[in-house]
Structures are given as structure tokens and as C-alpha cells.
Image (cartoon, rainbow, N blue to C red):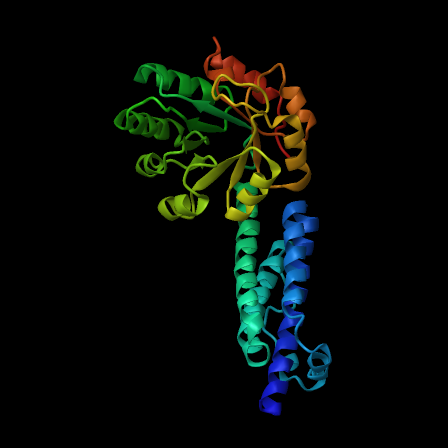
Length: 351
């Protein structure tokens, strides 16, 4: 190998390794202190350590010997906005860009001096992309669902009049999200109900979500779709509905919740918390699962499963401020009043 070529490659790898690690530290600090998300902060830290590990075969002495900051012409080149940032988030955005570029350069130039490390760096680069997307989605979810506390699931009802009456009562009762969930309706009727619900919610400041059916969500113009662990993935749902759609994921354990965050979900459904008339489970995740999610994950998350005005305080005690309710409200004699009582038990702002 040409010695000069070798030294140049080491110098470039050293510069970009430092750039990458510094950038990852900056975004980790953003996730840790600004977003206070333990899960994503841990992922940033793990990625940083894995980048170092991927280059352990390199000769550290040669890497450091190739460093020549005093004669690096790049130190005298700066962009007009390099020394000013509009916000803490802008700092993070700039450093994600720095990480992406540095990792690509690392992957290319390491091929000259340690080609076996290139595949690992490629994999880590894609992990960085995924992590950046998760952080961006977290910002988006916190913004779009800032007010959302009460999420109500309703079926199609036997008639259109009953359906519209129920939807109106739920909105008047304070529900900020409505989800159409009906496993018995024929497709045409389900789509009809979805379009009606879209019309009802459009100018009321209420988000409309379809359960499971990405096709119905797309055709009705819904704000998004909610999927379970066995339905289409977040990636596939996003491919059909586009980047603006809200995509929620049902999770039943901490690992599923962590993965949903990395997959790019906009919000989580966490449960089942208590026995429910809407869906039957052999096991219940319970209140401890809610505590685990609250400790680690900042993405908007709704506790679900058997929640009513008699146990909502137990849910609140876990740190959760968002709930999803089905049968407990829609089957009540006064769904409007029941919605109001549950909404009153939840905070009006904050997390």
C-alpha cells in the first residue's frame, strides 16, 4: 500500500471519527436534556459506542499520528450561519447532518485501510438514519398531540343516525381523537362510516384515526391509522398514507414500545391495563407496564384497556396523562357526560 495514500486515509478517518462522535454526543445531549427521553438517549449512546467498536481493528497510534489539525485547511473555512443557531432543536438538526456526512465519509475511506470494517459502518449509518427519524417523529408527535388526552374508540353503530349522534356526543364531551374500530361491518359500510366521521371531525379540532385498515384511512382522508403487532408495519402504512399521516401502534410490553419508537410511530397505545369489553386478552400488561413506558419513553402514549372513571386515577398515578377508551364511554347511557367526566380527570396541558 502507498504510504502517503495510507496516511491520508488515516487522517480523513480520524477527522470524521471525531466529527461523528462529537455530533452524536451533541444529539444525545439534546434527547437527554431537551426531550428527556431515556430510551432514545440510550440508543444515541449505544450507537456512539458501536461506532468506536467498529473501528477497533485500526492502529490507534497511526490514527493519532495522522492527525494534523494545525495544517488542516478546513479549520479556516466556515459557513455564514455556523456560529449561530435559532434554537436548541436547530443545534440538534445541524449535528444530525454532521453525523450523517461523517459516517458516510468514514465508510468510504476506511475501505482503503480496513475494508472489513466498511460493512459494519454501513449498518451503523442506517441505524443513525433510523434514530434521527425517531427523534424527528418524537418532535412531531409532541406537537400534533400536545392537547390530546382523551382518545375514544367507536364502532359503526346499527344506523347512520346513531353513529352521527354518538360521534357528536363524544366531540362535545371533550374527546380530542376518535378512532373508528369495527370488525363486523362490511367494507363498503365501514368506508361510508369513515367518510362520515371525517366530515364530522374535519373542522372541530378533532383527529380521526381508522383502526387497522390503511385502505379505509386513505380513501376516507383520515388523519391516520392505528395498527397492532400483527397488522401492517409502520413503514408500509407510511408508504401508503404519506409522511403527514399519524400512525399509532399497539404495544403490550416495553420491548414492543421501544421498537415502535424506532420504527417511526407517532404515538403508542399501551395496554391492556384492565379487563375490557372491547377486546379479550389472556394476560394484562397492567399498571407496571405504564410505569415502565413513562420512565423511558417521551413519545405520546395512551393507556388503553378497561379504563373508566373508577380507575382512571390509578392510571394517572403511573405518570400517564393520555387514555384511550372504547366500551366504557360509547356504551354508557350518557356518552357525552361520561366523556366529560373522564376528560376532567386528565390534565389540560403538559405531558
